[in-house]
Length: 237
Image (tube, rainbow, N blue to C red; front, side):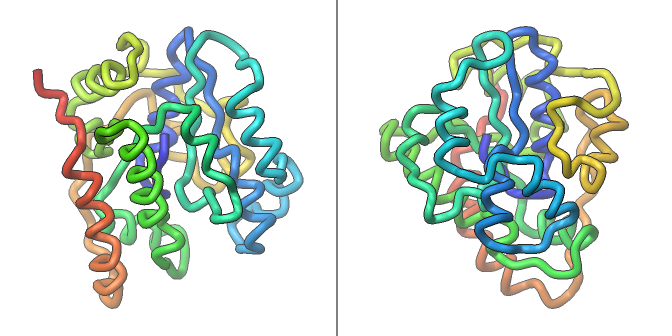
C-alpha cells in the first residue's frame, strides 16, 4: 500500500492486521530513507538504529522471507521512502495499491506537525511514478483508494479493495482494539496518538485549508493526485 504522509495509512494497517490471515509491516524502508538522505525527522536516530537500513536486505525480506502468519503480507509504504537509488524491479513481485488524499489536505495536515513542507516531503510525484509503472505492467490501473471514501463507507470500500486484490473481505477489518502494536514503527510515539486511541475508521472531518503561501506547491502536486483519483475505487455495486 503506497501512501503519502498524513493520510489514514496507519488505520489501514490496523484494519489489515485485524485479519487472522495477514501479517503487516510498518514503513520498512524508513530507516534507509533517513540514513541515505540525512533528513531530520522526529526520532531519527532511534529509527536508524532500530531498522535495517540496507534497502537490498529490506527488499529481500519483503519479497522472499516467510511471513509471521497467514497468507497476506500487508506492507505499509510511504512513497517518498522509495528513493531513486532503490531498484524498482521488486515492485513487479507484489500487488501495488495506492492510498490517496487531496494535496491541499495533506499540506494542511503536514504543517500541523512540521514547520515546512515540500513536494518531496509528501511523496505525490513518487506515488504517480509507482502507479504508472504498475499500470504499464498490468495493462490497466492498479487499485486506488481515497482516504475520505474509506472513512465515509469503510465496509463498501474495503470490500471493493479486497475484491480488486483477490482476497475475501473480512468484517474484522472494520474495528480493532485500541492501543499500540508490536508491529508499529519506533516512530509511533511521535505520530500515532490518534490511531492508538481509535477502534475503527473515524468519519471524514471537514477539510482544513492550508496556511497561505502554499498555493504553488498544491498546484504542482494536484495533477499527480488527479491522475490517480481518476481510477479510484468507489465501492459501488
